[in-house]
Amino acid sequence: MTTPQEELLPGTRRALLHRIAVAQTEGRAPSLVAAVVRDGRAVWHGARTSVDGHAPDENVQYRIGSITKTFTAVLVLRLRDEGVLDLEDPLEKHLPGTGAGEATIAQLLAHTGGLAAESPGPWWERTPGSLRPGLADVLGEEAALFPVGRRHHYSNPGYALLGALVEKLRGAPWEEVLRREVLEPLGLDRTTVRSQAPAAGGWAVHPWADVLLPEPVEDFGRMAAAGQLWSTAGDLARFAAFLARGDDRVLSAETLREMWTPAAPAGLPDVADGAAYGLGLQVQHRDGRLLVGHSGSVPGFLATLTVGVADDVAAVVLANCTSGLMTSQVAADLVRIVAEAEPRIPEPWRPLREVDPAVLELAGQWHWGTSSFALRVTADGLVSLGPLSGAGRRSRFRPNGDGTWTGLEGYYAGELLRAVRRQDGSVDHLDLGSFVFTRQPYEEGAAVPGGIDPEGWRGIA
Image 1 (cartoon, rainbow, N blue to C red):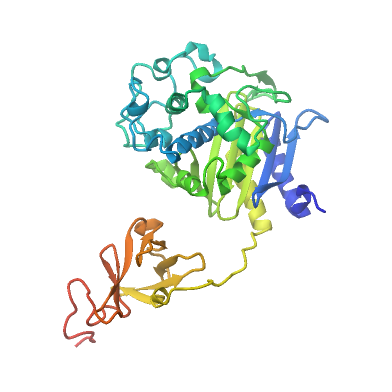
Image 2: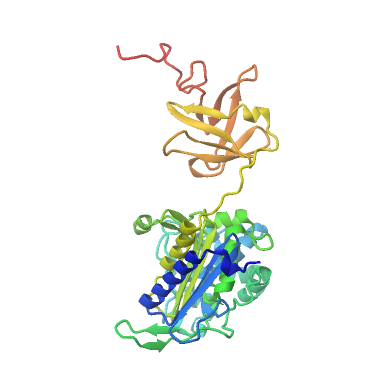
């Protein structure tokens, strides 16, 4: 019987250790701990430290900063799935009197509510939350910087509002709701609002000298839902597995896919970096891979959790320094190392158990104008339509039970696909959101918009 540590090949484990060792040395972090998840469970963890003989393990707590926002977003999505709220509801409907109530709940989740990035007054991450006892203190007199919904502007106060929304609708403190509805069901026993030993101390490292300064540890009060949590590499590995696969006790896989979907207009630097933001999750395209997760930082700590969606590999990186170490790059590299060294083995191909002849009749080549497409009937009960070669519009379609299908992604998401039949029951063409697909390019006799030139195809005279 093998242990999880032995499930990765020795060369892969050494490459992972080398990557975090380089990161800890070059980033001058007092300590760094990391974990890798594959196929839904932790398969590796490693650590480096500046203290001889005292390397942290996967049970040592670190502050995780804005990864807290993903936990808060999960609570909000639970309320939506229960029908308690709609994401398009303005905040004012459920939490009146904040002065930021014009923003919808979805816009607050995606940081498009137009709110300021930080709370007014002294640096909230290094001062006690008692300085900001109410939401008015968190938002200040001029909470909005931009028109609602026009641009992505990361906002910590926006997530303080979402935490207050959870409290209002659940009738209990945010931290109590989080423990009851997320932490306990997922077995995240070492994720807490306040530190519980063993926990790492937070340090600032002098930029020009190899010396340290301890950072203060404050209770963020009203800002807790934006960045208060402490957690461990072990707990965050379990949380990463949940984000990748879902857990019906907390959120379905379908709702988590919604959280991954970019929901905010990206600025030009973000477009260049291949970065976007969903509903409480950062989305990146790096090294040819789609990565979803979140990073976090508070004085004394840096953290990243990232999931490589196609590879089903996730990584967690935690460090106890204020700056100097790019945990997001390290986490992406850990995913890449495993994915490239030990590529995911696909599930065996299996045929459909049965197929409707009327659906099978539609399989094969179709033409939209002169562009060639293929329609395939797949074992998951869907049909897919995409170009025969090269790039172009493509989508999977789910059946609606009435002979039509609805697009699931890309240009055709939400669009209706239907087969239009002649009086004798034979298929004339496919209609996809008014686009006509025929068996031959501009097929004679088919209902092609604008008609077909009666002289047909010809050469150059």
